[in-house]
Structures are given as C-alpha cells and as structure tokens.
Amino acid sequence: MESGSSTRRHSTPKRSLLALILLAAVITTACGSTAATSTPKPPPTRKIAAATYFGDSWPVGFWASDLSYATADFQQIRANGFNSVVLVVPWGYFQPALKVNSFNAAAFTRLDSVIEAAKQAGLGVLLRISYEWDMYPNDQQPGNARFTGVFTSSSTYAAWKSYIGELHNNVKKYSNVWGAYISWEDFQSIILDAKSADSLSSRLQLSHSTGFSQWLSRSYKLKSISSQYHAHFQSWSDVPTPLSTTPEFRLFYAFWDYQLMHRIFAPALSLYPGLTMETRVDEDPLFNGSKQIGAYSHSSTYSLPGTNVTGIYFNPYMGAEGGRIETVDQTLQGMTSVLKRVQSASGNRKLLIYEFQLYDNTPANSSNAHLSLASVPAFVTAATPTVVHKTTGYAIWTYRDYNANIVYNPDFALGLDSWTTTGNVTTTTNTEGHSVAQLAGSSSVLQAIPLGTNSDPNGANTVTVSFTATALSGRSLLRVQVGQYCSRTVVAAAAGSPIHFVCPMDASANYNLSIAATAPVQLTGIQVFSYTQLGDVYSNTGVPEPALQSLKSLNAAMLGS
Image (cartoon, rainbow, N blue to C red; front, side, top):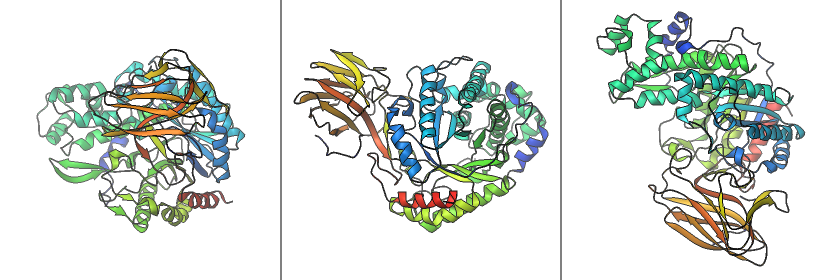
C-alpha cells in the first residue's frame, strides 16, 4: 500500500598500574611499527558544535547516496546553531584495493563536493578517518578482516598508511577542514579475534601474527608469564594469547592499547598533522571463569602525544546497569562521572565528545540501560552547563533519524552501479535535480543482496521496503520481490508519494531485490531496512523533533552566541 506524503523522501576500579609500567618499559613498537620521528605541534583548540552528517542515508551507505541534498541540509544545520559537521571517511570505500597508493578517485571527488558544500554554508568539517564500515561492492577484505590486517600484515599496514597520507594531501587545501580523528572502535578487530579464539592453535597463531608474544618478551621474564598463565613455557613462541575468561586477558588489553598509541596513532599523526583519537572510555570487564573480578581501564591512551585534546564518546547506557530506564538525573550523573574520570586520567586535557549519542535503539544495544526518548530534550537542557564548561565541544551522532538500509546505491547517484536491468533503464535527474532511475514499460531493476557483512539486517523477522516511484504517464503497476518470501504489487502515481510495506523474512534467505514496471516510471530512495535509528532531533523525513530546541540552546551556550 501507499503511505501519505511527507516533507521529504525518504564503580570505576583503580587505574591499571600494568599499563603504566608497560608504557615506561617498552621503547620500541611491536610488529615492526614505527612511531613518528617528530611530534607535530597541536593545533589551536576551538569550540565545536557539530552534527554528524549522513544525509538521507546511514553511516555505512552514505557515500553511495544522493549527495545533492547536502547544500540545503548544511544551510539548515548552520541555521540551527552548529558550526561544523562530521563526515565518516571509510577506508574501504576510499581505498578498495589493499595496495599502496591505489585509491577510488570518484570517492575523493565526492568528498571534495561535500566539503565545498559545507564551506559555502559556513561550516567547518571534522573527518572521522579510517572508518571501518562501508557497502562498496569492490571493497577488498571489508570490515574486520581488513582491520586485522593492519596488525598482522605489513602490506595491509603500508596500504593503510598510504590512505591516511593521501586523505590529508587531498583535504589540506580546504580551510574549513578543521581536523580529523580516528576511533578505537574501528581497530578492535584483534580484541574480538582474541576473545573468540578458544583453541590453543588459534591462540598461538594470533599471538605470533599480531606480535603479542614478542611484545610480552620486551617487558616480562618468561618465568613471570608462565606463572601468570599457570603454565610452563619453554620459549616465547609457546605463549598464546590469553583466554578471555582469565585474568591474564588484561595483558592483551594492555598490548592493544600500546598498539593503538604506537602502531596506529603516532604514524597516522605524522601523516595527518593535527590528528586526534576517540579513545576507549568504557572499562572492559575482567573474568575468572564466569565471575567478573574487576575491570580494565584504557586510561593509558588518554594522553596521546601531539595533541592537547582527548576525544571521547557518550551514551546514556555507559556505566549503568543493563536494561533499566535511566532518569535525566542518573544520565547526567553518569556523564559527569565519565568526564571527571577521563579528564583526571588524561592530565586535565581538554575533552571533545566526538560521538554524543542521546538515544540508542540499535538491536545490538537493546539490553543496555537507556534514556527514554521523551526524556532526551530535558537531558540536553540539564547537560548543557556540564558540556559547555567541561568539554571543548561535541558532535551529535544522530542529527537525523536514519534507516539501516541494506541497498547499495539506492538513489542511483552512482548510475546503475550494483544494479542489473532488463528492458530499457536509464539514470537521470528529476525535476528537483535529484538522481533517479527511469524505467520504460516492461523493464526492471535488480540488486543481489546476500547475507553477510553489511547486508544482513540484524537477523530480523521483518524488513520494511520503501521507495519513491513517480509514474510518467498515468500510472504504473510495480511488482516488487524481496528475497524468496515477499512479493507485492503496488501502484505508482504521478504524484510520486513514497511507498512502503513490511515483509516477513527468513533470516536464512537472501534479500535479493527486484522492481519491475508495467509502464514508464522513475524510482529513487530504494530502501530495505529492519530498524530506524532514532535521535529525537529530526525524523527520517526531515520533520523537527522535540530535542532540536534543546540542542539549539546548547549550541548557543557552547559557541557564545
């Protein structure tokens, strides 16, 4: 069936003494990595009130979406009192092939266009570089496999460094690119690998490939590690990664922190001056079997060289008991505690909240404590003095609600890339100047969407199908097929109202999509998604929501206007 019209389509433990000892004792880097030979001078610190921008898409699919909306969107963002936007720059999309100096030229062109649009709107730009996720079909080793390679493969590591350098060379000409940062979150693959490795052979392999045992040998006696593991090792080559259910796993956390600082951040800083990092604020639980016996703090990463800012994130569930609904006071108390703890551990550096997430309804975090959506405006108002006086700024994560769309190139902004067709299908722009696919009668568009990385919509039982169809002569019947189990016939009228419907899905099936037309029609904004990320600022159709006014007040207070 058709929908109505819309305004627009679619208790903190003691700080780990171990980490401090290791940082003092270890002088060289693991796995052949090298720190920057000289530390760039930190740039001046400015106040930041930013909106993370995904357009009408979501983080994973943004660069394959219609970017022509950016001009109007940036004008709106500026009018709401923000002075900057954050753009995610996925490594895989900008450097699909894992070769030194091999890049996606079209991606850099699109990046230039968005930065220029921000400049025309009077907005600064912050770049989250080396973002892990993208939907680019030609991405070699997407996701975790690629990022594990940064720690285990010299060629992958070299390719990553060339990406960092090329990115800086490309954007340094823009006066409104105020800085860039990397995030711990995009480099946690080896932590996930270590947690899932349960056989001795897999643990030994991971220990050798990441350089963990070599790193241990620089700070410990083999006898000491044998004692901690409750084992007897003949040589360092016999030392596996620790099991995640043992207290020794703190050693792997310390190794990872060191790698973040010396293999990742320091070399990247030498290639991208002014770089900062969003650090791991949450403390990781330590176990003895199934019993939690403490927590590991990543505070050793809070005082990075070459920057006077410590990047952090905040979400209402941090430090809270799982499942409960947080009150405004509880959430504010939690945020104040996080800021105080991190600032103290960083040596009173300035804090920047790179990811200020007010509400999180992602399926993966559904069991976490959360602030009710209705309480978000009151929390923003209550948190304003703390954010203004305790930080140098923030970037709201969900400025506009977004659907977790698994369709690549959903607006045909990249022509027919990843679409196959039957009959006469072309791409063009509509009367509003936005990209569309134009289908003649008896023609169709199809996209293969297998299960797997970036495509499985969280194993949902249902998905929503949504698109805009405009009949070019009278009306057109459209036959829509999603996977094996959902088939619908809908009517496209001249008005071009968005169409959506819900499909029952079998998570073991694929989500292959086809739309066939009986008469000429234009299609755009094609989406298949299992949930909508909410933020209470703007809806996914562009309607202002309650938290907007509170954010505007926060912006005025932060920027002194």
